[in-house]
Length: 529
Image (cartoon, helix red, strand yellow):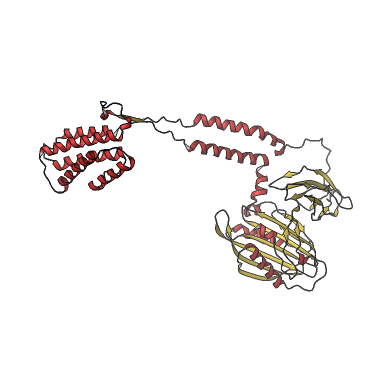
């Protein structure tokens, strides 16, 4: 939202789009008492071939440079800070500063500084003896360098704790598996011991007998046998035998088919074979299993006399790398990186420069009263508004003498303020405020790719200057959640023959504290500060 407030389009017939330039200035205040200091900052959105100026001060020489700091690099931009002060009361103008970026000249905005004297009533103020000089109290910056020692120590300490308290890896016990041939032979032996034939349980006997041979085929040859019909299983074995060159003889396949068909007749056709046929099928199954084992594993045989039914193997469990260690190390690294950044720059620095304040914090914290632009507009805000360097549109150069825009945004609460002022080169006739405010809203809709709804307009007047106020609602997509959120926008436009002043405040509709912040800002506006 802040991006679109910076690039506000002012539709008054001849006024175009104001675009952000490469160089900007900002200050923490423009209103000080004698001897107080101002932090004056020049920002350049480039990091190559930037030459900052030797600061030019006011023509009267009333403003002094207390300290010039080294150039800082923050988020792909250069910043040069100066501490200024004055020991004379009055209004002093810091002129435009020339900055070279890639051998191209850029000019900053000029800055008006107000310096007032401090009145002291000696009749009421008691006089005290001069005290001895005290040392300046220690601040956070005095201990900042210690972080370069603390961070490695904390990292080492975290690594030691990890290796001391991490869970010991329990060695998995190797599983001993019986080979399919051994399992089949054991099951045949158990089937014989059940004496199902003596109990005349022929159907159950054939069911277990065929299950033994089918289970062996499925485990050893790796083809589906338990759920296949007799014909399907035989066809699959024939195809697999030819394609994989298993070497199973046709006689073995024929024997398997005959045994399975006999079992099907017993189970489904209520056939009752004689005892000699049943014992023959039992021996045939054992022969099928052994012949198949010999054919499939012929390359692994050592001697023909070696007993295949005693074959077993041990499967060593594969040690899987647990992702816990990797994720834990990543978490520790990110945590200490965050702590290091906050520790080095300070929590308040991170919050003020990247997160901003919540609207509740804005109501509770100190507010700042400042005058902005030309023609001047006085407004009280939760933070000092930053000056944005702008480039006038081609269709506005001939009519606009001075144009300035000042902004503040809090990403944590989606709250944004923009104040703009426009000075005309020549006095103009009375401006139609309805056309002006409608043009600005239409331009913002286009820039923000949204639609304003529930638009409410009313006439206002501050310090004898007519104005127009518009309250609108709109939706914007939250980039993190990809969901639309409801916003409110309050826009104030004041215009006379000399110039124009505008105030924009945007906030979330669901933010209850935002309305109180907006009302305080609007009530503080003065056009003759």
